[in-house]
Length: 141
Image (cartoon, rainbow, N blue to C red):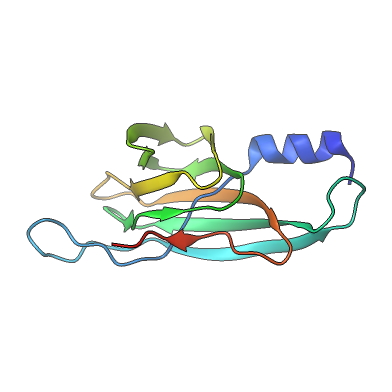
């Protein structure tokens, strides 16, 4: 895989995603996001020693949320459908279908939520991680 191809893939892909239970202030359980890893590949090319790529799809049902977490690796996100409100390092961002973003390693991803009461949202998350390595670390409460 050449660097240009990887760069293009990084622009189109992303990260985010964690399946976790969340509760609203009135203690009613909110729908939870879910994710599925669609690719995990060790990189054998020069300059990528002990690195791997992981790509996942994160589904957010209407009003779905994810709990606070961190990614120990560069994370790229691309919203495939719907809308997401993401709080990263204390700053709120709204992303719509076709939007992409980048999160720095170890940054606190306070939350992500689908604000729609009727429409699901879908996110493509792309990570460049240590091989072997994890992509999601739940935030300690």
